[in-house]
Image (cartoon, rainbow, N blue to C red; front, top):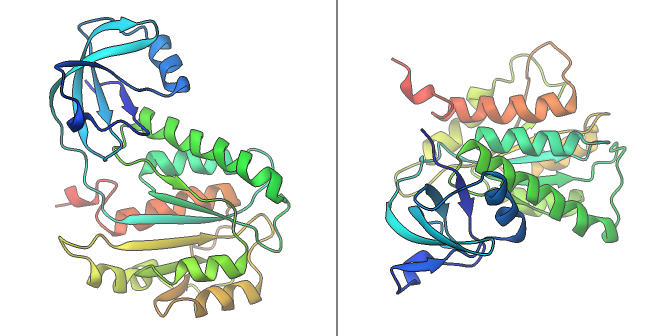
Length: 265
């Protein structure tokens, strides 16, 4: 049975000198703990600010704050790859849907992309509040799904910023409805797979356009941003942006050995 899981923003449990100590949960996480009706004697999983993973026993409560003791050190699931989803800004709650489900799959990073055909427009004033909301959704999804790595959500980027960010990845996969059927994902991932090792987790960016898709100019600019950038086809079906934003990173993770692929005979 999986343990209820919490992330700590600032507290490093290895620095605690007392056997029992208060767990510095955020306000929202403290509310979540209350909803779970956790009692003294129950155990929880904690990922601290140093990305260390512990099992803790709740000894008591100081108001809403759990007083815990470390029961043991846990080993988190290893990532198949560091996958960054570059998602074209989509209207309504589609961004929230994509971030929630992609986090559950194991996506490590999100870059909302202010594409030229994005219906949603986010100005500087709204960007901070939107990003805070999306980060909270990623955290909630990671807690629910048992991810031991908290995905980072960037503030929305325009094309010039995005090009700079993409230069650091081992491979960039551009999902484009006009890509030829011969533009296979496996081939696009080959540079990242060859560069991966025990000491280097492959970093792969997956680019998905907004409702209106990516323009030719955007595709050309993204392909030029990284020597290992390639367009790929997701098949003949026309996918909604929120569907592609979930399917594409799942396929990448599977190809890189995640999503149960490592258990294949």
